[in-house]
Length: 444
Image (cartoon, rainbow, N blue to C red; front, top):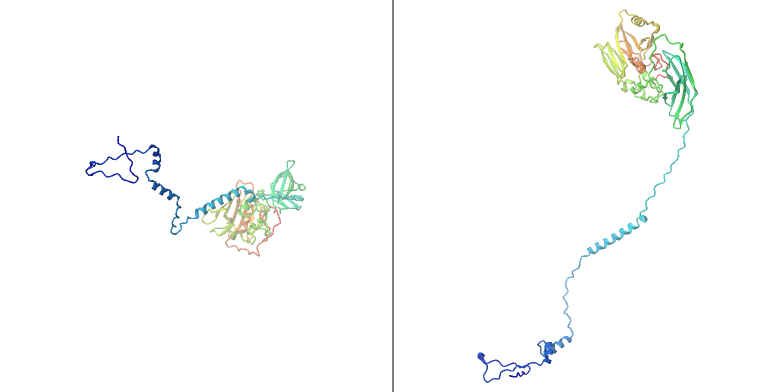
């Protein structure tokens, strides 16, 4: 067996002979096996020589040289707004939580105002009316005139109560606070009526007045003429029925609607506007219209009424109130030229001159009223002008003052019109129909 002789350290084996053939005469290289005890050391040396290992150990022990400084350049800064936004959100959340938990202290709720309810001092009731007097008067029908004295105190009106015989007291009508009189036209003969008056105010109702008694005997003297139908209800006793108050724009609870010192009915009777303080004529106010006929006559009618000519020459016409009552106008012949009284008696069987009533209108026309006072006659140019008030089936004469207003406004062609200064002195409503006025009237 050949023995490998180790080569000296650092020596290289000789190259093989050219041609790949072993050199002749040379000894074959010997393979030297490393002893097993040196095998671990060889692994640690990792194929490096001792000199290389020592150089590596010295390199590790030497200090690390400092790094070369990096050349200076522009510094890149991060944006700051995200941090600001974050801080703002955090502060907002903290502030919101603080406000929420301290909301009662920071925002105290206002206390509801203390309402002081003042108990009004109760107003006293007005004093009772005094000296109530009932007087039976004889016109074309029995009526009872009431008058009393205002007892004082704050009031809004009066209430009249009446009882028939031993019956219960029943309300008759309310009256305005200025009223001290009333005309009861609904009484009947052979009855005994008792009246009492109460004052009404904000403080309540007064005690009753004294009781006034009106006795209407069966044998009470009555006119020999037929009875004029009683007037329609006149709540404030101003001469205008409640139906007429609406026509002329006045208040049925106030006797002097325009507070000018003249009763409403009195102003209409004298052809003035009852709802205007200044003296305004009815025709100028638009409350009436002039009904003019080609025959030569004219008169005023309330604006809401309708008028028609029943003949082309104007000798016949009709005025309708719209409430069942009608006025008829006609021009009739008087061939013999008789006086009005004789003409009337001749044309109306059973009538006598003593039953007629002579009237003088505000325009200066002289005429006659028939026994029932619902027809008027005027002599005119050899003929007779007739104005007839037809009640139809109505039991009351609701347009009495309107009827008298129409008579006062009547104009007949050819008959001189009396001037304002020379106009006849007329009291007011009821002057023509001979009924008792409910209050003292004054010519405007």
